[in-house]
Image 1: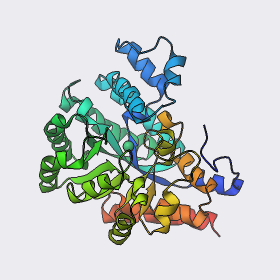
Image 2: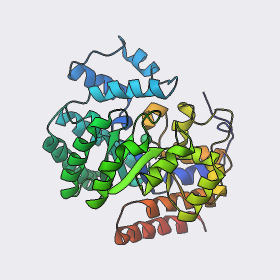
Image 3: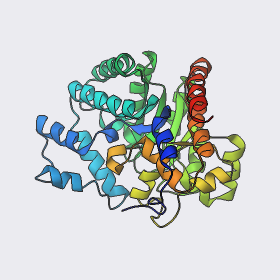
Image 4: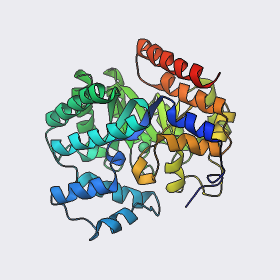
Length: 348
Ligand SMILES: [Zn+2]
């Protein structure tokens, strides 16, 4: 399965630059960044019965039929992640993978709605605090976490907010997110916790405009007052929304392989990114659940290169991630200096 233009060749020089450039990732899920073999290993370790008998069959399940099939697989993967040690292991693998791609800073989602009954919150917070420290020491990568509410279980929203606030106090959580099933669970179901989270000083995000059209993005903006939109690619269907996003420069976290694999973007069409960028919308490039979609952050940039984005455009998207991040101004300046140094070396 390959998307239109994906087999177009690009110059080796451009591919090498995209691999080597320092990067920031703003939309990636820790649980979804755990590959099939690791999930299988965790299932054995925690004595969770898999839906199929062999690892090969489990790996084959990653060819998703649609969004609901994806949620089923994701749900099973989460059931396998049960102990503090599992999370230590997952964070380590995640860091090694991001380091391999020269990712320097990540804002990472946690599927909190499905995690909180498995083990004590303080234990999760302790493990993630350790993970952040380890990332800095061993890989020179900064991590921050954003727990999210699963839309299909709105009753968990207060519990998730309590959890976020605990980690926020300790400086490891920076915001509240909203993921899961967009169809049937509109943003307005969550206004109470978003209002409270805003009062508490948390950053606010939501997946929207992925499996539901522009109305979902409008809902995230008007009902939840989010600062960034996860995906948001279906905004391209509404000229008024495009105009609004361009005017306010609300960042979109765009994840192209995820969109193609889940049928959000038809395989025979170019990605919505071109329409969004051309309309002046502020976009960033991200990998979402990389092993589930057979991708990584570098491959997302390569996909856009193959669909005709120039080096200058791709570099701008990479710079956009610094601006759209929740780093302090001082931290952003430090990353900009590093980016500038890289640019000076390759673009003489
Ligand atoms: Zn996502």
